[in-house]
Figure 1 (tube, rainbow, N blue to C red):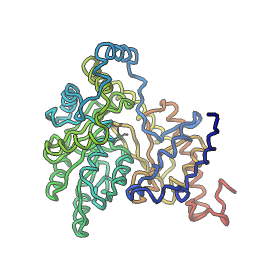
Figure 2 (cartoon, rainbow, N blue to C red):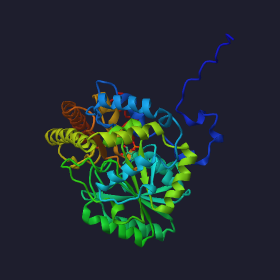
Figure 3 (cartoon, rainbow, N blue to C red):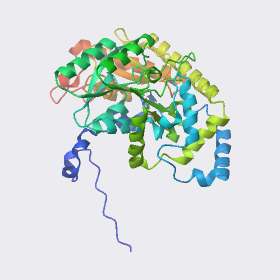
Figure 4 (cartoon, helix red, strand yellow):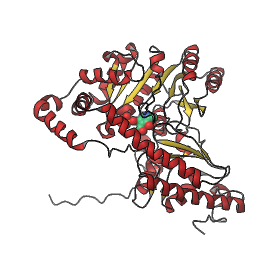
Length: 440
Ligand SMILES: Cc1ncc(COP(=O)(O)O)c(C=O)c1O
């Protein structure tokens, strides 16, 4: 039995060397590692200030009482907590989820809630239910990278609609739908993140909400409302959910990832009744059931902790960080840059002067010990090279200020180069004949 294992082949990122290539389903063609994922390894080095990832800051969680609650849960209800459950989710939790949603004016029946493994699973299931290859999903431009991943995995085509500082532009939505109709494309749903948008940091104006719902109704298009940040308004403000305004045409995705603990992976979908039945079937085939233990942990937490107070504490921490990033941007960024002013959530969306390519600049930023997420990852169509997402949720305010200072210095030198060469886009100035500053 002392037979030696064959040496592991060195990993190659090159797809053509993958011997399984001819076997993959066609849908895998759209499955590529997100730029953000590729970045995690470098960005998580301690000397790098990472403004790249969107990890919630959990430091304020009451770990001691959570751990005794969990121990008690296993001791008292272990045989239920460690057993399979229904694909629909634990009934008591579904009732509590309705109370959570009531904070955003949603009135729902627990039967219409399906518990999922994070709202990411909800996104995946909704796309699976509605999208055949080639169907169109309308999404804000930019949009959440994980949603774009799901749409690509089901071979849906994404048509982006622009936002301004009031969120999705209704006129843009009208135009996109009309264009799709003209080109004979089948639009399945509008995917929208109305509150404290990831990555744009803006919120859909309340006055626009009814109009957007009306446009979707007119065009017979479903609305998928993704709302993981809605309770993280810095002034305690909440907005009426789209779902509260049109229950029959909105599928709502919720999550405990940002308001409690992302590692528990508990989210939910609230869907019109008929869709809910299909969702349960889809969930069953994906996971049999969401983890019972984690659902009971969330349920107990909601029943026994001041969860609203906890969300307020989280919000105060994020607000302090938001203030740090906005004042640092104001202080350090070179002229010609602009950015959004979030009043909740985790993200600021920055636009840099024309000619700067944020994706090409990223290795230089990481060398200068700061990381961000370049804008192109948030578009399905290659747009976004002048944009970047800065997440202020995780680092301390001091680190955020230092990160922005470093980033501004990188941008300054990028713009200096631009003034010298006309562009710092590697396609324009690098290559063997024109070595870039890194390789010269
Ligand atoms: C807009 C948006 N939707 C969904 C998710 C996924 O969240 P969950 O942890 O619930 O799967 C995220 C996570 O960052 C997000 O930003």
